[in-house]
Amino acid sequence: MSYAGDLTPLEAWAKLEAGAVLVDVRTEGEWAHIGIPDTKATENDPLFIQWNLAGGYANPRFIEQLKLQAPEDDAVELIFLCRSGARSIAAAIAATEAGFTAYNVLEGFEGEPDHLGERTVNGWKNRGLPTNLGEN
Picture 1 (tube, rainbow, N blue to C red):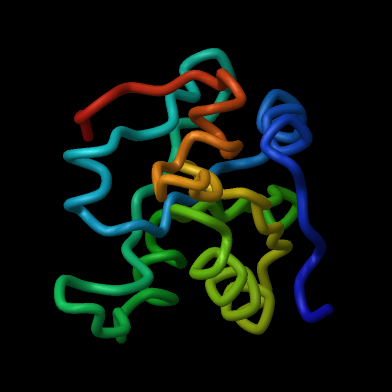
Picture 2: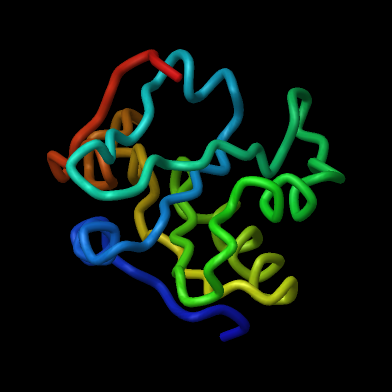
């Protein structure tokens, strides 16, 4: 594995409570229409940096934007979150290569689809972790 590891949503929340910073790598549309994680109960606000831009194109400035927004403290762990856990793995790998300690959140924000294709099985929202709907 080329990043620090995978965390369940509940393990990720425990790390956030211990001082880690959440990085939501979904798109602006996902943040606006599906919701965002609410980390007010932790000491750090989440960072919002798109891994892919509208149209599915890779964000060529992802690492640059991460370096601008992430805490300067090298000891701070970053926890990457996307819809289902795929983009966040790629982001965690890129962040690790850039010198950050990076984790991926398994299941993502929305989780896996059920037998009807609805994302109701697991994930940040479905595990009952704090969420703001349609805000950023």
